Image 1: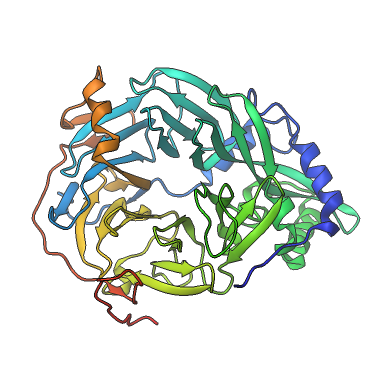
Image 2: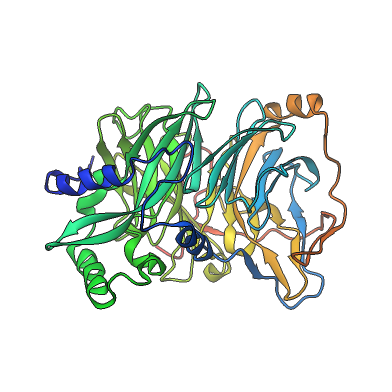
Length: 458
């Protein structure tokens, strides 16, 4: 087993300043940091990923479910939100809206949502707030903080979220700003319990050249416009937070967290209580990755965006050997690509649900690469002709949802045609259409009984 532990003894002065810079009351108002004022926060949101994607030249683009092989797909309900709306949907396998959440008390579009076992919804407004709604969309609480990318819900109802803030660190006799990430833990009632800066764990993984580049910009500009150079100062860009419910790779990892640091091309398992990195992988292998998760056989599945290749793939890594044991690429490879965002979820039947975020597309594959379910975001902007992006979709087994639907006081029916006049957006009726199922290209998977097909991209 190969395990990488990042030391950080040389960064103790940095860590002290980082913690001092984030000492504001997270659970109430955003941290009062002079670098990140409200205007800067708005700039951060504006610098995010494109929320609309080209829908093609067809005046009647595909919408909703376009493929569904019932005998092969894992049946369930699908949770997602369209990036330009403060609304979340639970849709069935035919694309019909079974339930939705919305609150007129919350402003701004939602970046990411998660559902609790009781049907409550946690929603992130990027760099704005974290909010909790019950099944019937009653706002339970809202906490202003620079939340982003991911939420993890604990067994006892505690809520963990990724947050960030600009902080200043000493470098070569001066102070330079960086955008640091934090794991912030809330009680089920929304009270802050703890916060852990990512820089304490991965400060030594950042190259000296990166710090020198920031310092050079500061010397030339005096700091003017530094917030707009997010790719420079955003050292980690953590986009995933998943608590492990088991030991993996021969390591004692139950209760640890699986995270993804996009700008370091790393996925890692970290012990936040001991402030220690237990395992990491990806440098030289991954290219701007997203959403690692643990598979049923203890491997790590990762959405590898492939930004420099213009080709995305899904890889499964054995953390005990650091070897790729399975991967999916499309056929042709360039037909599957999301430069930013993306997700992969292993389903109980072994299939994989893939979110191709930048196309507003989600599809389910068998382990031999056959597409057995496909969904396109039905949110279309008519002028210009664009589709809403989907950050992630998550599938729940029917047994996890049907009791909630039966008790709902505002159960939704099939989405009807509606127009948002302010945004010029048309939501059309979800529809299904028959289509063939092309094969993807995969490398062997260790799961018994699965046909092995050698990848053409090895």
